[in-house]
Image (cartoon, rainbow, N blue to C red; front, side, top):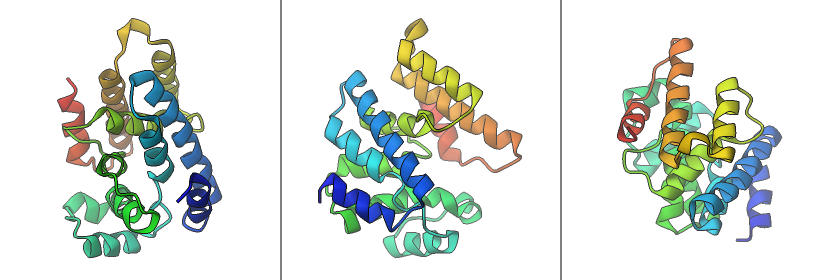
Length: 189
């Protein structure tokens, strides 16, 4: 499948706004891949397909997760939208023909991270967090640090900061925080 064919297929799965986000993440992932020495094509495909399951309803995400054998923890049960990442990896494989396990893992962990993230995983995770359409003061600061590499900020520092932003955001809203986000953050100390 070509990139153009994948984009056409995505148009039937996600909203126009989500497609705009996906294309911005793809572009950011490519930029970061070049910067951090990651395979650009893998970053392009992982960025393009990272949210391919985002258009599914919570009930459909739960149903697909069960169908695909994804373990549904209490947090997933309470916040099924988080399942879009692991379900999306399966959809990328089954419906978009992605067979590269490295790309599939980057899609799978792009929301919560993992304590064993590859550089590609970190690039896609960060690209999703800092793509230009997201507006937030802390994200703007993170973008500036990444672009200028001030104070020697590394990719690990940036991913850890993105995790901390996510944790703070959910704390401020009084929402449940998936333990994997905390594990991801702690693994980068």
